[in-house]
Length: 397
Image 1 (cartoon, one colour):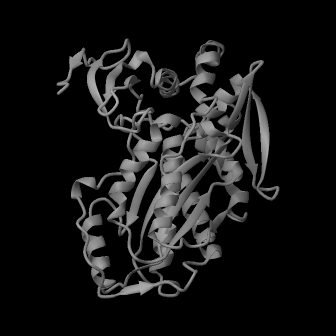
Image 2: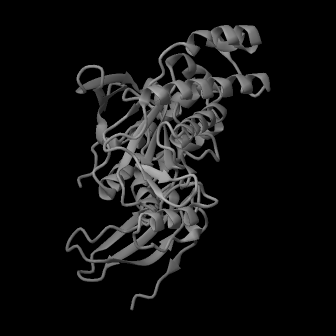
Image 3: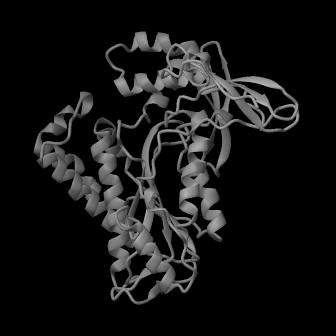
């Protein structure tokens, strides 16, 4: 695959320092770390190694990756590593894709309280699916789901929403049979939307009552409980967006989808078109206009601002598992699912039971550009900003 002509790293290297200076005091430490990580990713500053092809003796210097989860270049390998752990967990049933989106009126509150509100978004979406699925009037079964948080829209605006991947069925209340959903139908979107709205607003009001929300600038008046309730009042009756896409054709399609979504960042380098005269041009899709591809032009500083809107708080997991797939009992529940579905058990590494979110990949050497042979590391070396490897020579035999 050809390398993109323009990268987010190029924009940050060229305009990042001026942007930091112009916005001094308004850039969080986490955002500064992300900027620095992307700027130095795969450069001499992080050190690297010297490698040689075992077949044609071609020599190459390869620099280390930053391994930051917001870096475009570091996520492909991280996604592959995560997907390998998920392969054994897929069940031989249809899978559904359900998306829960916050209304525009709440996005400002969410941005100023990123961890709290996005955490609530996860919980409300997962509770909505598991509660409705357990209701005998709907599916009448305990289900599992994997949820992935995205905070961006196509134009890099702040648009928090959760993508949920849900198998088409679950375990009956007595634990003795698998309950299948109807063909191409999981749960009523209208019912999901109403419960999601209620659970999220109740949770948001509880956070406010407990003093766990902060408000700044134009949202400062919402510190007052009565003003806060008045602000939310219209949302109790408005329509909330929950939609279900067509079910996946099979496990392979589920994995292909997850590969695209789980470790995605705000914008891929492949969407960037040009950087000139201090302006960035990039492609975006207008879903409101028949999904047409369009081009947006932003001042470099505005592009950087929008990109950094999507930096997650330290320690915040953007991939989470619920219900049957919850980390504490996932292996046991999956074994039970396979037994009820009468399919062969799969060995699942219990050490893989994590939150599904990794900071970055290991460095994996691509094949030799000359002959496609395997590259072998001869020595590693430090960079000015790398962890101390010191020069280490390898056995060349």
